Amino acid sequence: MKGNKTNRFMPLLMALCVVIGILIGTFYANHFSGNRLNIINSGSNRLSNLLHIIDDQYVDKVNIDSLVDMAIPQILSDLDPHSAYISAKDAQSETDKLKGSFSGVGIEFTIRKDTIHVQNVVKNGPAQRAGLLAGDKIVSVDGKPFVGKIVTQDEAMRRLKGPKDTKVKIGVVRYGQKAVKYFTVTRGDIPQKSIAATYMLDDNTGYIKIKSFGETTYPELLISLAQLSQEGFSNLVIDLRDNTGGYMDPAVQMANEFLPKNKLIVYMEGRKSPRKDFMSDGHGSYQKIPLVVLINEASASASEIFAGAMQDNDRATIIGRRSFGKGLVQQQIGFPDGSMIRLTIARYYTPSGRCIQKPFVPGDNQDYENDLLARYQHGEFFSQDSIKHTGPAYHTGIGRVIYGGGGITPDIFVAEDTLGMTSYYKQAAMSGLILQYAFNYTDNNRPKLASYKDMMELSRYLVNQGTVEQFAAFADKNGLKRRNLMIRKSHKLLERYINSRIIYNMLDEQAWTEYINQDDPTIRAALQVFKNNAAFPKKPVVGAKGKKKK
Image (cartoon, rainbow, N blue to C red):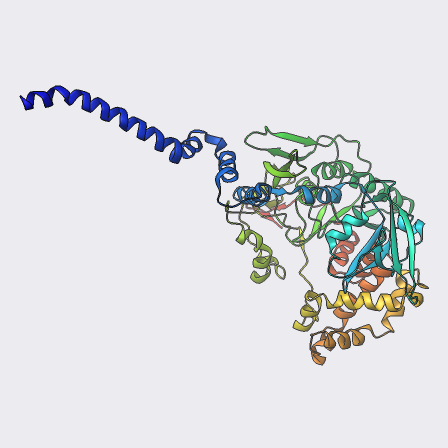
């Protein structure tokens, strides 16, 4: 009887256990594993869900914006070395670098001993119109002291830049005076020039130094070409050394000035970006002028587009050292908070079909970032035979062999000049002591130096002032032990570097460029090319057995 009663209630007990089990399971699922299930099931929304969970349940209060600022760069860096995140704080300054102008007071400054020193004043700019001078020390902004540890590059830019037509009151201490002088500066548009110098190297050869590719680069180029035309140039050197690039369109517009009609300048293509060709239209005004383009290991991106177009179309002779090797195209995408990303959407290819992007391993950028150091250690800066070509061979329009997969290899190699190089010179240059001494010397001698308005006159004056000996004493007091034998060996290099910075401080970037170009071996190589009538590349000679001879 007992057994029968137990059997009779067994189905009911089992059903009750199942119900209880479901209730318990549901409770634990909702309270302990529900969020995880949401993340797994939401696919591409996992990241946003994760941030929501952290914000909602993490043990401590978390600044989600800061967390995002840290996470996004890591995600993008795992794609390629050039996809990048730019915070809202830095976005405006990044954009200003490539725009034709920004709004501010119009000074170039350096920070020395927790004080802003005005290094240069933009000609006809707001600060000059208000009365500020190079050499002034800024001690207050808008009635508040601005000296000490609060003086940083970012804070100075924040206080001095601002909307056009707004006013800022600046207090300065002027050389030789103790009292603070006050100036009210009305902010205005400050031009951001991408062409650093335009002048004649000799009676026939014009020279244009382009330091970046921004919104105004092409119009600036046309002005420079018009200036050189008035001076009667018949040869042209375009210097792209240390030009890390910028916008692609100005490079294409520049190339169009020198190419005949229907020549491919560059094309770009990506997974979601169909191939797009950029062709010359035949309207360029300088299609036949002998042209030399200078590049080095820091020439990248838009610089390589221009140099590649000239090389592949056999339009110019490329001189210098192998360029950086950036062949990826970034699109700038903004977020509502003002931050933005630069996302790689395509590769660009030179007319021959080569991509000059150097190799990289996604997510591992250390070797990529150390590439230039590796090239230096390998000897590539000193010997053309040390250049490693990682890509296949291509051919220019007339059959010259060129290579992809790692920058533009020049037609004429110029080794880095190491004559007089010593460990003392390297320490002096890398420590910043030369820049510090040059500024101090300029600041202490402005009245005398101001009487020299011409680069050559100022250069001759400085040669007789013993700046190298003065620098050696200054450096010795500031941690760089004097090495007389090395100083004698490096005397020419030291004098060139020191005096060039004083000239820059007193005159401008053009005067500085003219000074350092005087004994530049790459400039000499360019002038020799014109002398030999060899600016237009020659077709390779085919031997009896069909082999091309160089």
